[in-house]
Length: 366
Ligand SMILES: NC(=O)c1ccc[n+]([C@@H]2O[C@H](COP(=O)([O-])OP(=O)(O)OC[C@H]3O[C@@H](n4cnc5c(N)ncnc54)[C@H](O)[C@@H]3O)[C@@H](O)[C@H]2O)c1
Ligand SMILES: O=C(O)C(=O)C[C@@H](O)[C@H](O)[C@H](O)COP(=O)(O)O
Ligand SMILES: [Zn+2]
Image 1: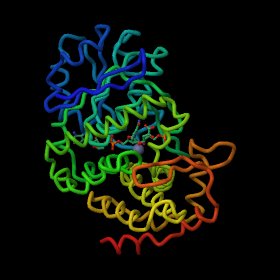
Image 2: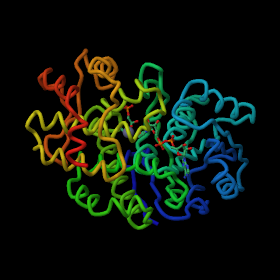
Image 3: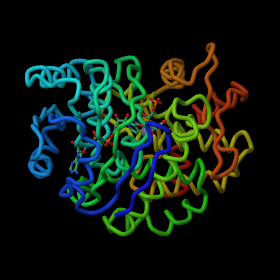
Image 4: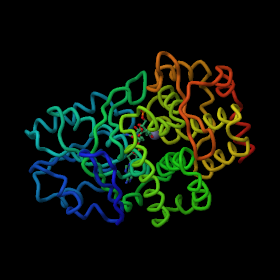
């Protein structure tokens, strides 16, 4: 087992990474203050892992709340089901909310923990690659609004993140690829040598090689922990974790939540950010193509939805959380392995990026 730390002073917490950790209650016990535990999961993950986790937590009074599965359920209505479960079982302020599932469950359970009786303890047990490398770390929690992704939420850090890499064995291939989008993101924004490692190992990752997966998870979590430790509430460098997300969130919202997976939208969105960085002359066309090729090898889409017009993108992007005084800040690449957050770009370059021929770019690489 490997343990990393998210360094946030009094709210610091460990990230434990290893195979079979669901069966190691001693890793959770130091982070559970009271007698009550509420496991929040969904109808897909519950049959796979709920019984094992409940057994691990048999020293506590455990309830579980099993939610419907999917991005389309990351809503107020579903959040209410969590509060219904907690109140019906009379959980008090010393309860611990445990998220067991992917990023949708983690984001919603974390937001519920932030709100329930004005804040109770929270633990993340992520079971998708995406949630293990990204969403379980850093304390962004929340739900979607029909007009925009993650528009309602809170920063609320967990007490511990427990990553059992063996849970990835049951993950569908499409979901594994979605997680790889966020893994590739770290290479692009802050770790160019990792991009080279990913190019050498993407096939092993897709084949669920446990050694390669564990290495990618550790390196991703280390990158995320460093960024979050430096800027917990996104007043600066943390916004670089949003590479590809301004375009990607527009795709998710426009297409209907869940039609494109988050990781898929981030992949296509990051290709758009690569294209814009190339148009600005910050990276070369060869470097842009290197990124496109890696997303393709990871099994990810690199062409935005045909039906989305430039106006559609601009409409959704106008309410991105990085907009300040009506000016859209974008995360772009100054170099491969170095992201910047900027509103200093000619409008025409953004227009040209939205209108670029991504199908042609994809074919060149394909
Ligand atoms: N808070 C953050 O910092 C952050 C970061 C990245 C993404 N997110 C959010 O995370 C969400 C995406 O997360 P996701 O990709 O994990 O999607 P998800 O939570 O929808 O999970 C993907 C699918 O895999 C299933 N699943 C989960 N674990 C499984 C397992 N071990 N075996 C088989 N099936 C399993 C789920 O039930 C679901 O059907 C989005 O809502 C995104 O906005 C948040
Ligand atoms: O942790 C962060 O910060 C991120 O931006 C990570 C992203 O991968 C993630 O999708 C996050 O939920 C996006 O946040 P948002 O504030 O743009 O909704
Ligand atoms: Zn993301």
